Length: 324
Ligand SMILES: *[C@@H]1O[C@H](CO)[C@@H](O)[C@H](O)[C@H]1NC(C)=O
Ligand SMILES: *[C@@H]1O[C@H](CO)[C@@H](O)[C@H](O)[C@H]1NC(C)=O
Image: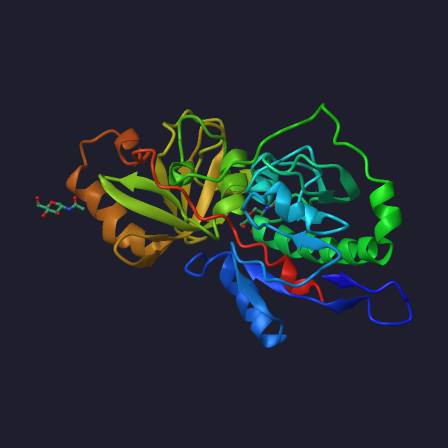
């Protein structure tokens, strides 16, 4: 971007956009926005030949060379959705939710070559994370916050950069990409609280999954259950094998026992999407009738173990879309 100093005029004189190459899901929304706003677009590693004052990246996922950074008199700013140095790396919002952080925020920092998310902090603002917010909801809030913070930095660019401070050495954590294996619920190891966090962190990108009698089941719609629901089925205080599935007829949900506590499930997917009632009628009840001698603990979901390979694409933080 080329920034104007005259505050009476528009803040930005000229804006050009660089996207990561197209089949990447991250580049696409940026490219579409740029086309709509009639901005020139370059596809990385092409960055155009123009002269600019400052560069800005958000969730770009590529290291910038020193030579490129030096082309910008005011350097390159990164808008990162966490309070650095907490959650450096490609999936900060997911890890914020997964770890149940009560506070998060946005950091605007100066890009340094060779390593991600280590440069000096130009501006940082925090916000509380509401206890039930999903990563997707948080992303929307943080995108807006980041866009507004960026504008205020650009309005006072030299002063903002002069006030930049190194990141503290304490409190560094990493937010790697999430692997598909993370979506497999570990019934013996995870509490209901941990499973709900996982659901809010990644459920919209990759559904939680488990095994029902050797078939993969995706748990699509989770609901919290309270003690009075458990009391209905005389489950309070009982020792039940984790993964055990019980159908709650009045509420039309499946109750699944975790390491500690229970989760409710409203719909699942086997070959197709099924309500809890469909699953009960099509799978749970017939299995029980066929296996009337089997102990109740056999009627359960079992942890699905995937070969640890597939990586998930990073979530799209379409922060650029909010910058107008
Ligand atoms: C418990 O959950 C049920 C079903 O969602 C609801 O009807 C009931 O009001 C809840 N009870 C309490 C004490 O929250
Ligand atoms: C019940 O048993 C029958 C006969 O062995 C079998 O065809 C059917 O698939 C079984 N159903 C379930 C749900 O186990």
